[in-house]
Length: 126
Image (cartoon, rainbow, N blue to C red; front, top):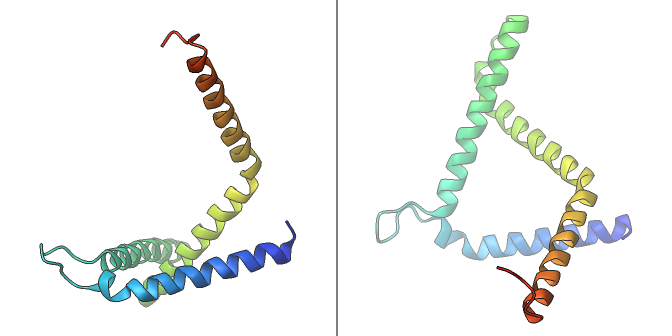
């Protein structure tokens, strides 16, 4: 696949995901449903914000210990930047491991095909 094709696919999927989220937004964001449960989107955003504050507080602590500069008001922005950095690192690792994943998937399907063939031939002991 060329780079242009990958970009086109990525943009198309992003537009589709954003459209689905926009349509589902009122339902997902409702504060409480009939059982008093919070909406999925609200819980997800709360989790991401809590994670961002935790990561940001850790970065603020490290900067304070190293340089003595207090950045406590920057905890949330630093946390969101940290979340994005972790996401990018995960994507890069997954991109590098793509061949390994494909090998495992092909191996798995091959083993399942062998198992099905053995079941058809009544050879398996299980």
